[in-house]
Image (cartoon, rainbow, N blue to C red; front, side):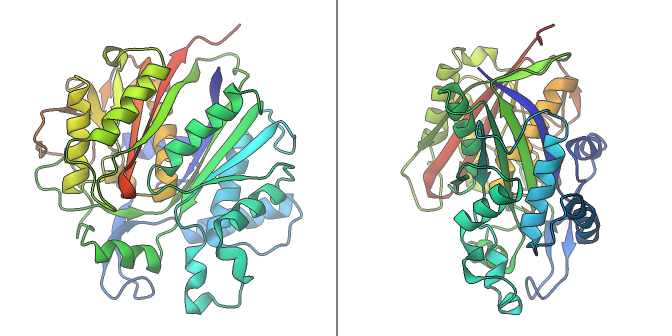
Length: 388
């Protein structure tokens, strides 16, 4: 059995999960208009972290470790996130029985910009190097597992961590992930014409594209439960590829349907047991439509569904991690967050989109994720009583 022990979120809304969740409960939106030609010639909406706060907190953090090395923005975010998540546990990250799994889509992609040439060694832009830097910083003896599978990377990383623990390869796994809003990422999504001119509106009738975000997140998983509180348990997870198109999802939701089916099968439950669904919910026309079809095909049209991306944007490799951390907090507090930006159903299937923060006993929940290349993933979390 795999237990969720601790987590952290660093985003535009805060530098801890508690801070982020408090802002989400208040309905605060982290997506603002960015007018910076270093990113894009025209203003665009995005969710970006407070860099002054990042520098201040990282300076204090690095001094504690007596580490004078030079780190990139993303590395600072990830290292701070891991440290905060670990601070609430007794896990030794330097132990051989502790693994690190890194989720990212583009890593230090900003180092390719000519303005940053020469500041770091050329291989710093490679994903394996980012993992190596994190592992070495914390003196972890194991090779860091790097997962980069489009926007399902975060959920896939959690599923992989649970597999490593359930197969008795490790006692604990630190799952961390992050991505930046960068010139490369913005221009890529602009080329798809997939960015909304305003903060995104998941599942809404007037949705017109996604919003980008940057964030880092960490979730600590273990074979050992925490004491003195409810425990959240990884019950099952899966991934599937709908083999439909390089960027467009299956119109029948096939890959998502299969991923959910396999996840609930591994969890040894039926779809009727799901109390709440945290969707991928990018607010693009095809993604939201596809997810609604996959949900209906499992006869879960009455299960309350939300998307977090109307608050924090699409944070790519961090999305599955921070949205799972938010889901865990929803379960702890038996409170489902409303879907920011949603007003009127805009998908062909009538599903139960949450439009107001709602109290409900949450015992078993589903997290969905989808991405380019037809990739889809899902995981199931359940709440159990902690041992005395």
